[in-house]
Length: 195
Image (tube, rainbow, N blue to C red; front, side):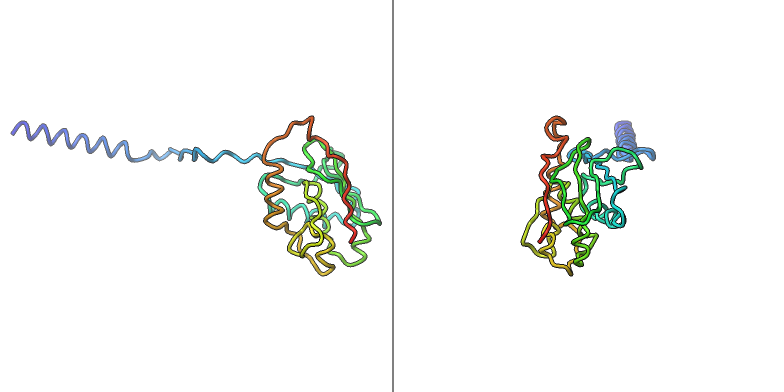
């Protein structure tokens, strides 16, 4: 009988110990998943001080990219602060220096009034030209669903959102931190978006 009492006491103590070790404490936070590394985000600043009447279109184009990709953020630079992307309004066709621009690099977007005067959507123009800064070439001819089809999407096309392929290309280009000496500045190729 003594043996049964000791056995029951040991079993009861084991059950209590087990329940204590299984229950999490109130202040415990879950451990992060081991295969999920934090996403590195590249922040690129744009200067719209010379964008004239197109400042809101540039902001909308930047927001389109910010909503579409995870590892790049386009942020308006404070007045007088350095910026990787300079936006200038002019009377020609929209054009841009082909990137991908990196922090500390410099590219230019010329927001051409000629396309606006012909009826092209200003937000699409801005998002398209910013796409060049992020390293995307033109994809002409192309449908309206392709942001980088530019003017071949047609005057009635208002799509300012990059498609899945365009998003994946930008995500891939900014997936790793490049050598500053190699990639800080773009190659200087200017892409003109005239039809």
